[in-house]
Length: 113
Image 1 (tube, rainbow, N blue to C red):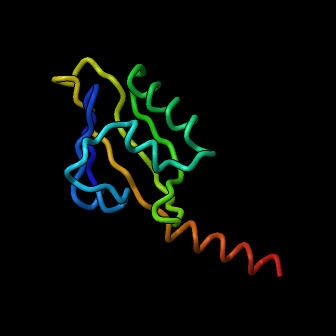
Image 2: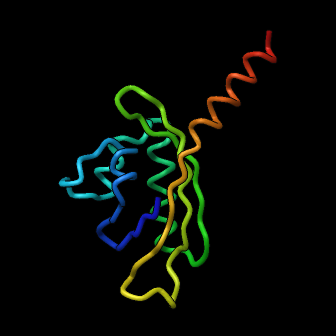
């Protein structure tokens, strides 16, 4: 899923809206997405988003979101502010690695027995 972030707005494809359980007619902002971020990760994700706008170079953060009672593990990766970026656009991706995380947790539980 490709995410294009501008200074004040976000653009996501249909898979992204489905992943976050957001209707495509809703305004897509960092504040709106923050409603789904797990409370334990919210401050860390906000700090990372702020830092990504100020730092030159790549950034990456893993975090969880809550969607209809289900926990999803995501990795956000992108390129921070750079002189070559035109029109203040930053391209990034969100990777959903929930399946892998659940498999790891299951493996840990089996190992503990």
